[in-house]
Each structure stands twice: as C-alpha cells, then as structure tokens.
Amino acid sequence: MAAHKILVIDDSRVIRNMVRDMLPPANFEVLEAADGIKGLEMIQQQKPWMIMLDFLLPRMSGFEVYETLQQSPELRRIPLVLMSGRKEEVTSKIAEPFEDKYLVFIEKPFEQKELITAIKKAMVLVQKMPPISVVTPSTPVADAVPQERADDGLLQRIEELEAKHKLLEQQVASQQKQFQQLVDFIKKKLK
Image (tube, rainbow, N blue to C red; front, side, top):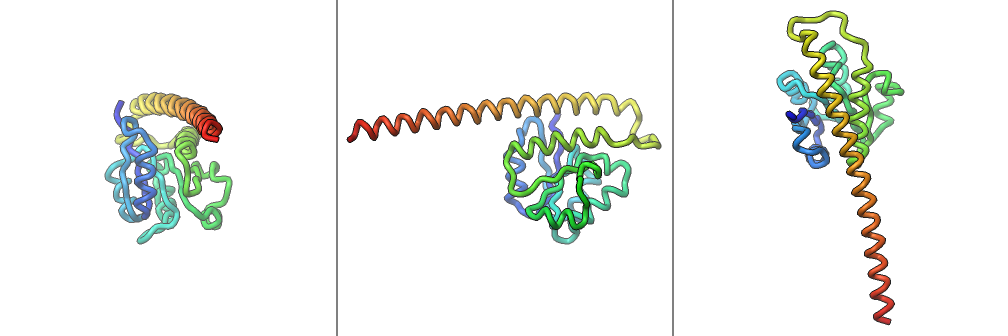
C-alpha cells in the first residue's frame, strides 16, 4: 500500500517532527511547510491526501490558507485538520461547529491518540461533503471508486492501530503496577 501524503503546515519544527513521529511511516508520508505561502505551493504541487494546518503562521496565516482552499472545489475536498494552541483565536474567525465547515480542530499540544482520532474524523467529514456538481476531465468518475476503497482500507488500518495503541497502554499500565509491586517488595526486604 502506498503511503498517504499528509502535508503539515506549521512554523514549529517541533510540531512537524512530532506529527511525523506519531504516524507510521509505512502508511503516511509527512510533507512539511513552515509558512502559509509555502504550504499553498506544496498543496498545488503535491496534491496531499490530507492537510494539517496551523492557524497562526508567518507570511500567510492559516486562516488565509483555509479561505484559499475553500475557493477551490477540488482543494476544499482535501481532509483538513486545523491546529492551534489558542482555540479562541480560531473561533473568532471560524464559527463552531467546525464539522459544518468539514474540518477538524485539534488543540496543541496533542497526543498520538488525539491525532489519529482527528485524522479519522477529517476523513469521515470529507466523505459527507456534497458531491462536486461538475465532473472535470482531470478527475474522471472511475477514479473515485478506488480512492474510496483506499480510504476505507486506511480507516480500517487506523482502527487497527488504535486497538494496538490501547493494548499497549494497558500493557504499560500493567508493567508499571508490577514494577511498583517489585519496588515495594524490595523496600520491605531492606527494612
């Protein structure tokens, strides 16, 4: 299975690296842009499968990038995860519920589980979008079916990863408990 391209547009290298580290490289190819202008250029060139967009960016804000995406019927169908450490700044420009705008908001900093949930939710929201009324020669109808199958396969893979993540969390909790019991036992023996 080919890796899905996720474009992370964020001026923080830490956030870009964090997203890269949280996603399995076999399933996702993480592309990076440090500002809104570079992000738009990469969207046009790379046609990413999903966009993770910081709201506060240099050169062109995340809101301006969002507005530009909304003007293109093709680009607005790319799943969008909007990121910010300040939700109130986002809601001052984009009214909630975000689902009505077919985007997902995730507050920084976030954990891997939150990221996976946001990606999954963004995929579902885009599938709920009304279809484009005009079919262009560059997007034949025949291509739509394999993409949906690929998305369904990816959704299934994400669900499997979530289940594995939950199992690992349980195993870590169990090992921490066992470790604490061992420490308590040793302390008792040393007295």
